[in-house]
Length: 275
Image (tube, rainbow, N blue to C red; front, side, top):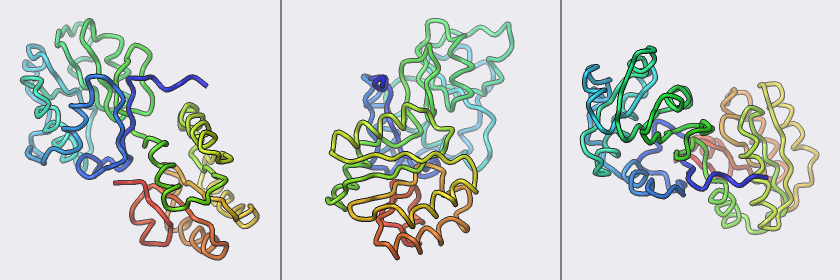
């Protein structure tokens, strides 16, 4: 397995709540630590309205810009918190700009630093950023020309360490994940589990039906020393269908379960790795 890019960090999953209370973030990128710390710890000093894209002219004469996709209004406060974090990092004036400003063939801009929010924006700007440094925020995979970013996924090392602190007898990890996540994530979890002496069994799911089948299979796995980690988005396929059956089976078999949202703990799982 190829090791994760040394300048690519991991960040918590809950996009709406992640920037203040997550203790699962680990930013490996040199030069990104201060920015990421500000993103995580800064007070929400920017009103959600300020997250609206700036006037077009400011996108072309500012050295640091944050480029946004079209946003659902639900995410405006999150973007406002990101803006507060970047500004607190001391990078100078920041312009917040819509991606459409840079999609026309004749667009010319010369910032020194571009923060690209999401996979679509990062990929679109990677090929036309010139000499600017592109930092991808909340992406599943870095575009090839981009070597700095903050991932949407949790750092699996921190999750495994939390699992072992709560369940030291863990000897096998059943890792249930969405089939579409990058293979490097699965490979990294496998390597980290083996480093800790834990057997690793990945289970890829692509639909609500396959997720339900993965839960049913928990009735037959050896329960002694086992723990099940439902990775980002699996139970979210339909929590009302999946979580009750998961809780019934896991409680009946004394099988610890890790999930990706706090409210699943309230419904009976052992540990949530969301902020």
